[in-house]
Length: 360
Image (cartoon, rainbow, N blue to C red):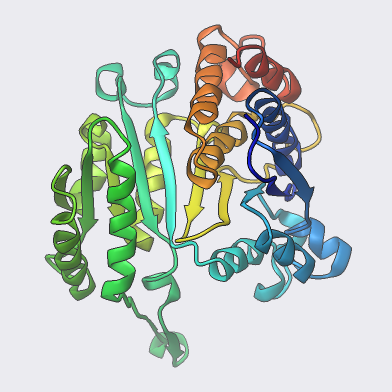
């Protein structure tokens, strides 16, 4: 059955390998659309370095308006050495910050899964990571990164100040989002991470998280200090299901989780608010050293389309089909150079072909 109305996907390829892998991700989405009759429509916009070159700004109003009338945003990595020297407001990464702020995208989702056929890619022992399947939900629009900053003095008299503000409303909405997502997962467990033994904002975080947990009596909700969580991620990652935490802690812990997996080339992400559009992007950067060579790993971008379908459009069956196709391709030995370990490797398009051939 076809969708009741077309679903517009704003496609923003970005820079470097972003353009290459997002093109492959769209190929997969188009094939899923053909099979499941989702009514997807794709419209491309400029952002990042490409937009700076074209119009002198990292995210032109035309792109923001495209996103505003879309159901979901598929974004490639932005930036590169070419644009690193401009003023802060004109650097490529401002495109991402603008989209987060404009659409109230306060919850960043980053899954970290270690599939059996890639256990060797993890730096941890097999018995530690085998079966690990966790999701980090990071608060994205508050905390230390958005607090007031100041700097005084010079040389040995220099001093700097960063503030870490959080409101109960900000904490409640992201913890609630994490709990709602945990309800869809088999283990139904949430670990709320803070530093309540030191920080007043963390004490507020824990109080509000405890209140929210009472709304979800069907879940197991626990609290953990961030330093212990950092240890447990490498000591026993299998204990975690959904981790929810504030902005800076989530920034650090999600990168640690990528290290547990062993490759950024497999990590998708989603940034969600209370209404569409959500923003969906692979975690890796623009990799200018390999851009244009056709060897970039497209799997993070392809897995990002699964998150787009699941969390952006509410389409679980095609999302699961994409994830299964990726796993089957890996199980059958298909690898790009970053995963091949010196063995014969597939290029970007060929790896996508391998996924499409296994899409059911």
